[in-house]
Image (cartoon, rainbow, N blue to C red):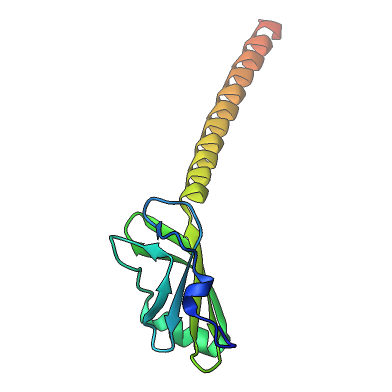
Length: 138
């Protein structure tokens, strides 16, 4: 793109519905933040980045963040700035749905493990108390 390539050349031919698909996608924005080419749709339109992102990326050259364009859709995203005759920004992103499901599964496993450990400790304590009660002279 910095050497004059077409924005469409870095976007996959298949459009990804970001609300349903786990596939990664790319969106190219022009210098003003308008869409130059998109491989993603959300509700039939290209997702719009918050305006502040472009300002941050202009200064730093890159931004990595999680993005929630609508409730229930979270994305891991990277935006980079490119220079040249027609400067702009490239966003590459993918859904965090699988990561969030794994986190929820891990949370459940930790809770169940904690309950099992607590229950086991209670049983061992009760058995030790019963054994001590039998061994103590009256």
